Image: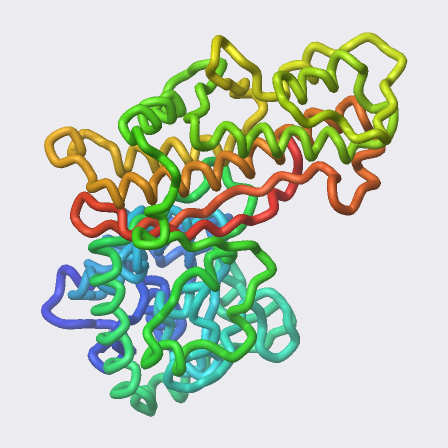
Length: 448
């Protein structure tokens, strides 16, 4: 069999994709493989694709540019726009955020006709916009896993019990039944995504343990798109989220913006301590005092508790009973401490993923371009508000985790048991100005 690139026009059955708008590289590949009965040994001669039988081909043809290009060339797929997953995302940051938790998703009515699009892979799309059918990740008949690998003796998109998601007779005999509706929706969606991508950036947590699925409810589609592709109730999320906008962040109580931002700039450096800006230091102190006061009796020594209330008018609750032991150095590092008249915290008290996310947001807004065109005051106020929100939570969670190493009974507390979350951040910029920020806090799968 000859490769399409060597011929004039398609030479494969089913390789006319003009009536399949926005088809994915894997969708085109699987369609041709099934309709031409190409076995895995023939992948190279037909597409120039070396077969690695352990590869999930839907993943490989989405995230491997080299493999995707070979299939596109072999099948004369003209539009690179709809083949690149990054172009379906309404934010900058690339398609890597999808890869870590990749799972093939499809519309049963579309796949029956040999059609799959990357639109169906987006977590905020819960139903096929033109068939109004709930999207699936497993066999629509029995719930078994579909074959997505090039294994000998197995056909793509058939489950382990033999249920076939593709009807080859329908693929060959009939035109895709929703071609006009699909083309119109995809055009509107890609146009909206491109507009959003011009001003929105995703900052995912480094080394995330959570799935990109947590962003499902953070992506707000225009109503004309949302009503078609989202089932009521399925976009709700148990993850906590916070959205801050430029206009609502003006009253931060910050009188010296350059000084406050300069102190937070140490987040981008390998330093042992962070100098807390004056306007946020009381908030960190209050967090430390509340955590200390809620600990079980005999959790902290007298010396440790006194550090939490150093130079404060408030005192520990009367219920406090000191532990009869020597002080632990690691616990002594937890409360914000004074050097002169300035408050500091140890970097080790911050959960790592949150501190890294805050540093990346700071770099995004106050990067090299900001030297020539610094953000407006309203944008800087918003940045400070977001950084304070992220780091206060990071400090509270990090403090509880450290304390739990010495106070195991914390794990029995519903309110104060140690837990870590990681922030997924969407930042909207208007030129060099920060316009709005949404933070989605997702629970880590494990503690460090």
